[in-house]
Length: 312
Image 1 (cartoon, rainbow, N blue to C red):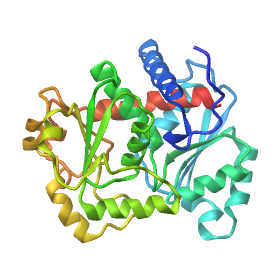
Image 2: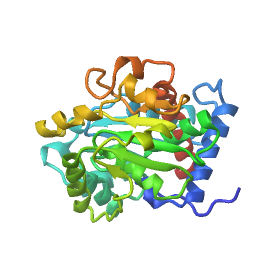
Image 3: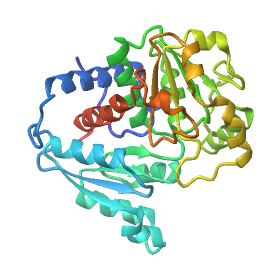
Image 4: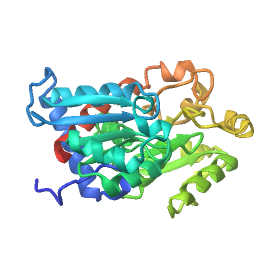
């Protein structure tokens, strides 16, 4: 299939057309099935290429999956924590840091505290930039989730996906995916205080999203009864302070065995991880037979390999 255009960066889901998203997802699934027993360096698409993985935030899955993805595509990677370089101490500007990255790499993967850091990076970088997570969005995680659902359900068409809890960076990327008319309906059950915090955050980036039809401050049993996928996220994102009043209100939006029983019988549960089994979800749910958290985590590798194939 012919590409609509050459992908230059991977920052937000909203940056891509419906066709581009579908092509990337279908290609990721196809390559995953074709290369199930792939060893390091067995695909040479990144041969001679070097990627910088820059982490201001702690990371488990993003660090492992991107590092392994680069190596499986025959590339090399350098992992830099925020504390490793002069940028964190204020001794060097972001602009000079990114220009230096561009001298020594063929692409930069960034996991940062502030989305503006990524936007400012785009202004000076001479190499492709991938958003590995920001306080606003987590597009790679969303793509892995979409991929997992397609594998599980056959397609995204006519599915009802329901988000429980705070409207996090991951939820923001799902809102953007929903706006691309990929075939699924999307509902969010979240307290008003959490919604207002989210609206305040996106206003900083001049985002204008119509949330009236998808955000509900109470759990709607009618929507829940038609739900094919239930998702949630940690209530306290790393490095971000969460209002104790919000935490208290979120207790009503915990994903429990009772909640799952009200959804469709074949409804699956997904969580981007890390998870707090005492807080946002019951152990019987996240470790139950309808949980697909490990399939989702595994697909981070495969969808990110496809992003790298398209970018570098």
